Image (tube, rainbow, N blue to C red; front, side, top):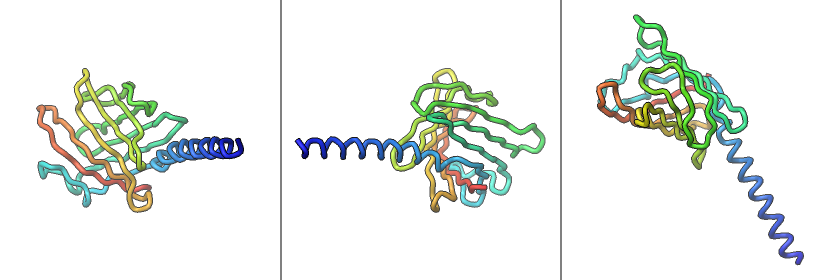
Length: 162
């Protein structure tokens, strides 16, 4: 009986710790991130090195990922501002600010990773995996995106915590 009680207690503690750690993992992504042009690449070789100007602010409220970004790369156009508040359950949630996609799906993955899918009319436009590197000082997102012309390219973009 004592052995069973001990095992049950150990299991509850392990589950609670695992759950707390899983919740804590994504909180490490919270903050403001600015792209690192020198380390980022696109598979088509046309990454706008030195020109890309993208800042993302990420925060969490319970299981919600709250995202805000400002892309002011194109100097002759107003900045593109993207906002969403999505529960990290893989279900679709509205996204504002883009004509290319209007729904986001977010889910937590193991090993301190997050999957972000941006869609329009059930068509996947951008799929990305976010990971933290350099002890949490760098956010790397790797993914595949489809251009407005329907051509896809892979990308690896690095962001520095501000």
